[in-house]
Amino acid sequence: MPIFVNISPILKNIGEKIEIDEAEKISYADDGIDLVAPVNVKGVFTNTGTNILFSGKVDTVVKLSCGRCLSEFDYPLSFQMEEEYSRLNNRKKREEDNLEERELTAEDFVLSTGVNRLAISVGNIHGISMDEPALDIERIKKIREAVPKNVALVLHGGSGIPDKQIKAAIAVGIANIHINTDIRVAYTEALREEFSKNSEEVVPYKLDTTAREAVKKIVKEKLILFGAKNRI
Image (tube, rainbow, N blue to C red; front, side):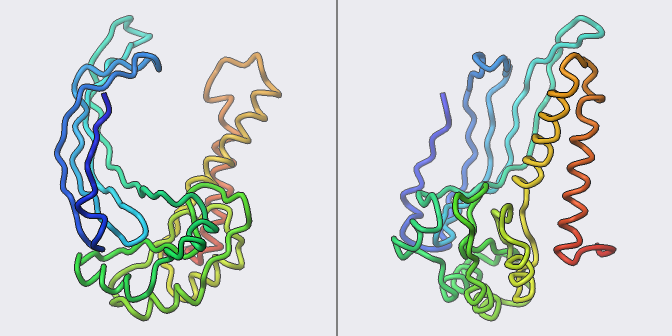
């Protein structure tokens, strides 16, 4: 049984929040995952103006098998989670609905919530866009001017955005860029190629060596692109 949260009370006003602390027994038996304790979810849903942002923590206990000792054991699993939820699937839909984030909305949200990092919607989407993304650089600049200097602007969905646009976004105020999909794609493509070359190999660390190198390569490229080389 999944955990359902009614977020309708926060949909009308930007900056509104709902705190949750829920526990539910969830089964993933079909996926071969044996959870031996309820899934505990604790966090906050926040109306950012264009999306609903969840930030929190998930805890449970999973039963694992030990191939060396030939026995099972319970392993506590805990991880931080941050996710955006939106009914808007792509940039064109956002433009059609006229629901792009405004600079004044960003200022109101920061002042009402006291956040020190602000993820903005400026033509970016999670994953890889079917059409070439077109970041609204002027909007980023206006939002940067509108919010306090100690608030870092975050660009979710940075994967697949042309380098020229990334550089322009950084130049006008973007301080944090998420590129998880780019990294996943690099790893997966290299791993698939290795499988096709060595289909008889059964040692995992030999199969994913090139995949790990592919990740290192793209991370280095992105660090240089972001101007983060030799910086903390």
